Image 1 (cartoon, one colour):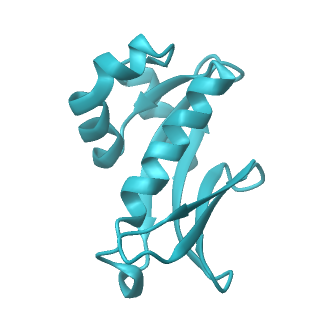
Image 2 (cartoon, helix red, strand yellow):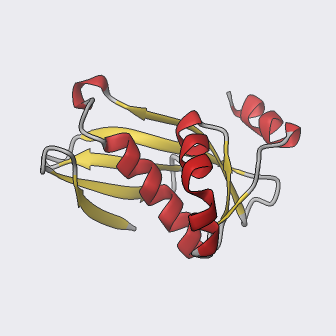
Length: 124
């Protein structure tokens, strides 16, 4: 999966699913990776993703890259029928704001549990 978008400056950016690193990566036009949205498999490994950390390199700040990254990770998860478990504050905020619309479009998400937090702690 790889999709191209425009950031706030009008520059082209690409979001790619990185299965090896369990992340969605965002790259700027020259191919430089500017950020990541990391996830771990949930208790139901095939059907859940715990999004626990999102980062964008500060040199690319102010371009709206984290918003693009979160939105595309959610969109891809919805298309795959995967339940999103938001732990990262960016995912929590996005789903707090748009969760009803996300669910109405077929997206699935649930609040994190102690078992989800244990999964994250074991990977740290």
